[in-house]
Image (cartoon, rainbow, N blue to C red; front, side):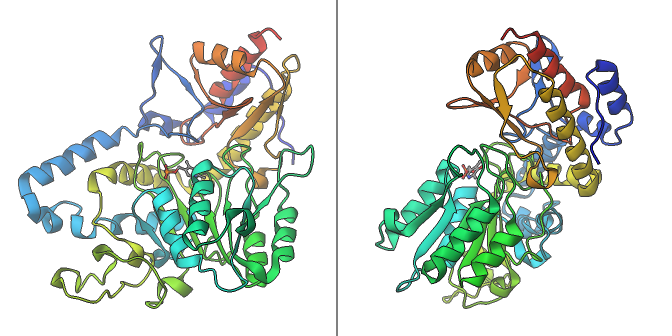
Length: 422
Ligand SMILES: *Cc1c(COP(=O)(O)O)cnc(C)c1O
């Protein structure tokens, strides 16, 4: 059913009044512009700080001061097993079993570590298929993994591009690309939601296609986690990784996450680069020779938990839990639909929204592709208290985030665009 929206401030405010998630906005710090909260549309790049972080951070500092090394066992959240506090909440957000997820490291690091386990080229099966225009870090990671195996990226990397003149890559083109590559394919690695267009790919269909030709399938979920519904276990995804500072609001460089499907994560023989934190917890401190991985994705950990880098993660996941994933998604679909409707009423500026219009093919982000004047419009929005995101050569990305954005935020952005000269 097509929602019916209106282009008035009164309408936007009336939507906010009946929005049960509206109070969650109060749990975040907003940057200020001329003494007022900014209109923050950049949660796809860096989520806002939960107000509870400061208290939790101070508590952790006190535990360190009070306990020193004993904090490993005596801290309120003992550092020895700190990563356990995230397990259940991350499993819910990613649609995984508890044993399949772990919070560790940073995103690109995890992508490399998981490719070391799941990109194992041999003989004529050595190719990696990915989307063209992937986030640069992912491109560099794939390219250098290929080189590490003595292969030529030109030959070993298959990039699926949009059809000529199109902005989006159709799922069917990825699936056909996989079938065409057949048993030359070792791995399919895709960004689950494209950072530039906001497109959410058919992860289940892509996984099925990869498996049908005997390839592994993994996803970078940086723009998907906390944004779109995920069922990594049921979709049979082999591995995935994500960062926590975008939709998960866990602070710049905050701890990242990883998923390894149970059919591998419980297999001690599955190759991984090991460190002591991935060792069986019962024997970890015996400091003996011979790595014995603990079961689950936690067996991919290397170093002890970066506790101060995990505090905000704890604060933020708690907010997700309280808001509820279903309620967040329902609001997200409606709020982004509202933003899209408002943008469709701006007829005098030269842009189009390139994000798919079907809700199941996107999260909250909308990408506006400008024919001209894009930068001028972006600068005008910035001067008027809008925090959006400019991507060369001519895209403005905006992300109305259901946890803290309002219908009025969307209206204000529309109002500014309407005030702008063509
Ligand atoms: C944000 C993002 C990254 C950033 O990687 P870091 O290792 O966290 O610096 C990588 N890949 C994708 C797809 C992203 O969206």
